[in-house]
Image 1 (cartoon, helix red, strand yellow):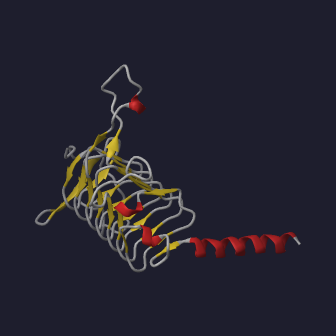
Image 2: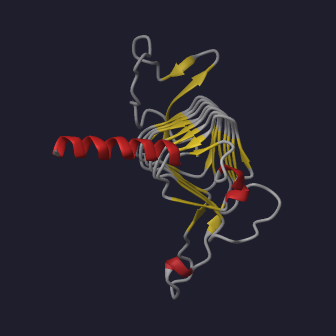
Image 3: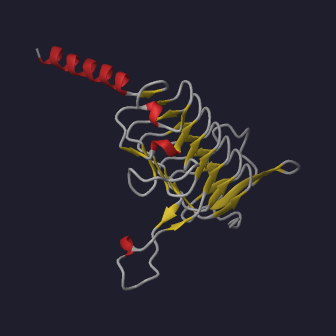
Length: 225
C-alpha cells in the first residue's frame, strides 16, 4: 500500500509540475512584455513580479524556485522600457535571482548554474544614522554578453558589463566594471584569471586540449577593474 501511495504522489506531483510550468501562449506568459516560443519557467517559481517589464527570448529555460523582479514592489508603473531582458536559448539555473530596478540585459545563449544572483541595485550605508535597509539603494545597469557561462552561487553586482563568451567561476563575486570578451573570472572579489587574445591565444595557456579545463591560476593576472 505504501509503495502504491508513494507512486501516486510522485506521479501526481510530476504531472502537476509539467502542467504548472509557465509556457509560451499561456495566460501567465501573456503577462510578460515578451515571452518567446519554446520558453518555459519551471514550477514552482519563487517570486515573480513586474512581468510587463520583463522580456524573455525564444527557447529559454528558467529553473524552479526562480526569482524575477522588476521594480521595488509589485504594481508600480515602471515606464516604457523593459527592466529585464533575457535573450534566446538561455538556461537560468534553479533558485537563481534576477533583481532589477534599472536594467539587466542577458544576451543570447547564456547559461547559469543554480542559485546565481544578478542585481542592478545594492544597499548603501552613507548615512550612519539611518538603518542600511532604509537608505535609498544605488543602481547601475548590468549587461551579460552572449555565450557566457556563470557558475553556481556566483553574484553579479550592479554595474557589471561582461563581454561575450565569458566564464564566471562558481561562488565568485563579480565587481562593477567592464570585462573583455572571453574573460575567465574567479574569486572574491572576482578577478580575471585567464583571457583570450586572437594572436597569443589563452593567457595563461589551457592545460592539454582545454577539454574540462578548470578555472585555475587565481592571482596569475591582475584584476581588470
